[in-house]
Length: 239
Ligand SMILES: [Zn+2]
Ligand SMILES: [Zn+2]
Image (cartoon, rainbow, N blue to C red; front, top):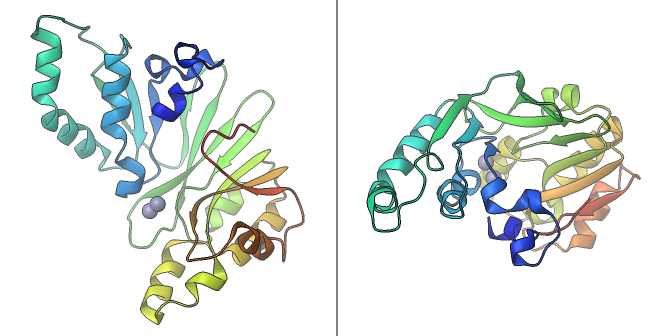
C-alpha cells in the first residue's frame, strides 16, 4: 500500500488510481504467507484513507480463513474506528470473498482476469492470472514449477511476469533443498525455454530467489534460450 501510495497525488505522485482509497480489488495466487501477509494492510489502510466501499478479494479456496482471521485479529481496531469519537464509514472494512477456479474470474468494462491452475509443491490450489485489456495482455505466473497451464494461458502476452530461481545458486544447496525448489519453483534456465516458447513482448522476472547470484547471472541463464527483452523487476518500476 505504501509503494502504491507513492504514486498517488496526495503523496506527490501522478497516478490517482493508485491512491490507497482507490485499491479495492485483490487477486491472490496461493496462500503462502509471502503472498498474503499484506492483506490486513490492503484492507485496513485503504479504509482508514477514506475508501468507503467494500473490497473484493479473489483467491483459492482457503482465502475465506484469511479474511475471517484478519477480521477477528483487528476486531477491536474496527470497532474503535466505527464507534469511537472519530467515526469512519461502515463499508470500507468489509470484504466480498470470491473463490477462484480455472477460467474467467473477473470482468469489467476495461479488464478481464482469467485464473489458471499451476503446480506449486503440495499446495492443492495455486493459480496464475492472465489479465486482458483492450490492447494488452499481462500474464502473472504466481509461484510454480514449469506447468502446462502456464504454457496454455501464457500465449500472446505483452508482459509475462514470472517468478524465477537462480540455477547456479540453488544447485549449491543440499539435494533435499534442490528437490524442494524444483517441485515449487522455476529455474532461470527453464524459464528461458518457457519464454522462448511463449515469446512475450517482454519478460519480467519477479519473486527472485537469488541464492547469491547477481542480476546479470540470472539474466544470462534466461538468455541461454530466450533472446527477447528480459528484465528483473524492482519496486516502483512502470512498464
Ligand atoms: Zn509460494
Ligand atoms: Zn512465494
